[in-house]
Image (cartoon, rainbow, N blue to C red):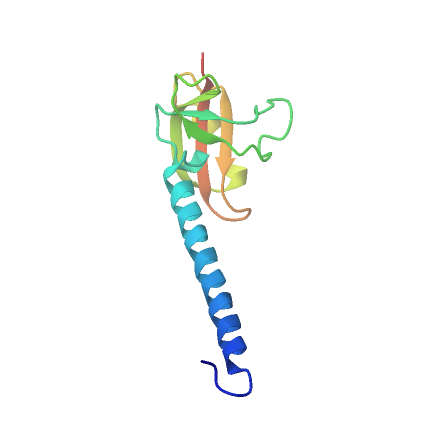
Length: 127
């Protein structure tokens, strides 16, 4: 039984809002967990792993956004194979000289924040 003055409606509204917030937090946590265990980004790739995503056009800016992600090399979408990886390089240091030491390197990919050190991946077209 609700007390006089309609206090029961306020309680119901507060409980409904709290329940909705809790539900959204749970959904967000599940989504974050799935994304964490799904294919990693390019900078997480290890030598020998393959990447899928937009093709890196050798004739244009090699620092274009490509959104590459790690996939199995047998995957039909596997576009590149990582043949070398060099950490702690700024964008202007991602040159052919960095990848020259890795046999088969055809494409240079850099991932990081502009002006800060990032990761250079030396890639070979996955055949």
